[in-house]
Image (cartoon, rainbow over all chains, first blue to last red; front, side, top):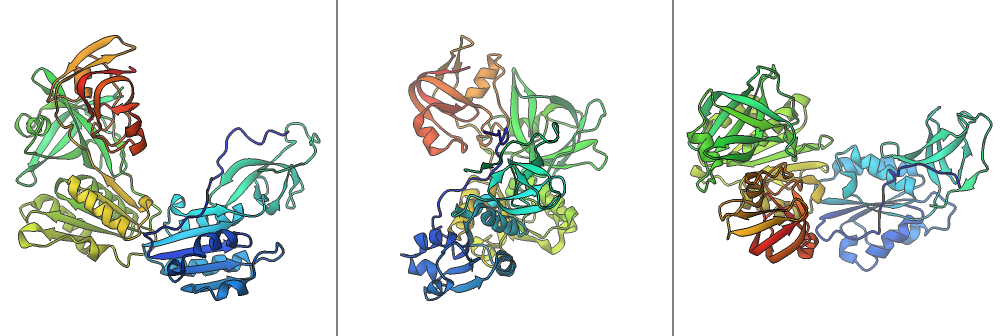
Amino acid sequence: MIEISQFDSRPTCGRLALDPRARTHLVAAEDEGVGAILDIFTGASDARSRAILLYAETGDRGAPRSDSLVGLGWAAFHPAASRSALLADLDGVLDAATMGTRLYAAGSESFVGAVIARAAGFGVVPQSVIAEKRGSLARRVQCVHCKHVAEAVTVSPYRCPGCGQSLLVRDHFSRRLSAFQGVRIDAEMPGDIPPAQELTR
Amino acid sequence: MSGVEIPVRVTEIEQATPTIRRFRLARTDGGTLPPFAAGSHVVVLMPADGRTIRNAYSLVDRAEDGSSYRIGVLRTQESRGGSRFMHENVVVGSELRITMPVNLFPLFLPGRRHLLVAGGIGITPIYAMAEALRRTGADYQIHYAVRGEAHGAFITELRERHGDRLRLYRNDRQEILAMSDILPNQPLGTHLYVCGPAGMIEAVLEEGRAAGWPAENLHSERFQAPPSGNPFSVRLARAGITCEVRCDQSLLEALEAAGVDAPFLCRGGACGQCAVDVCEADGELIHNDHYLTPAERAAGKKIMLCVSRLAGRELVLDL
């Protein structure tokens, strides 16, 4: 097994739970993340009536259809066809939001990180975001050499689509970029590239 | 354990309000004092008769050239000696020692707006924070509750620097600082900082929580004087020292009087630096800090030397 790194800067998050004191629930979910949202909001019609839901359905993982969410009595529902469209919507909602609003994020690790990073730009403390990881273990990784960001990396080492180097996926997580760092694995012994292994956590 | 101490001389004393004096402290060797981040405090070591009094005071500001700090000291009714010493014994020219600045009350600079709430002497760290925010062009408001205009020195300076960002609430005019007027409609990412009497801090924080503000957006600082209590005995298991804690003495002060270099930073129950493992307690631990979690208190394995004590006969510590 390749030693991934000596330290772990990966943010941890647990399960979603409603903040009973929040005046408004601002909820961002992507794909399977919506399952976590439904877990806490299904039996809570009052909370739904004070919830703004942003949902990105990026497609291929058999997540619930946006159509099934529409009729659930949200204060507002913003479906989006992509993560970037959702994040653009989120900027507008964050800009207009007032204190008393609690932010929730559910979906893959890179989605949760992207929502938290976006909100941090509005002065929201990352630790105050209630988040849950659902779905793929794939990682968003930035090549530290050419800065290319690869979405959905599932193995280490992987070949950087930007510069073609073989990169070791480290546990070093950038909150700003919502991405792990990939470093050239054969920097000291050029050509010495171990076989790729599945990222299992 | 207190770290570096800096010898200082008092170069100026100003009666800022009927009960608050401001002291300007310069290094005795004429050197430069370290810069500090707004919200920091120092511990002032006062050479009283037969003992050293140590009190934490928030830093108001630092001279542009770094040659001095200012602190504000309230003369408290129930002074345990520190504030009385500062008001009665300290004159221009007096020599004191201070510790390096420590910040337990920092600004969250990425905040979209900052609400600074102060009551009485609580203005000292808030003064420094407002100045830091003004310099960075941040969005901030100061809400300052005072007894009356006689609390003038701070008010005049704050008005000069912050104009209508300062809202004053004068008790003598029945002006009430009501959080219900302040909390609504603040933009997401607003941070609130409160310093003042314990009751005010608790009330402000509770109103913030009730309005759905995340705990991460609510900041406070409260240095508490160590409450007195019945005397008890303390034994240090590793050092093999036993000493008595008088009723008017804190555990930390008793250890210091016995020559023990015990750990501390804020001396007011806030920072956790002086938390020590309890080996045995023949009696009940009286936790007066606001650092240990309820679970830690219930476990009875740790005690904070600065403000907590034993109601009982003997306490054995892992020191």
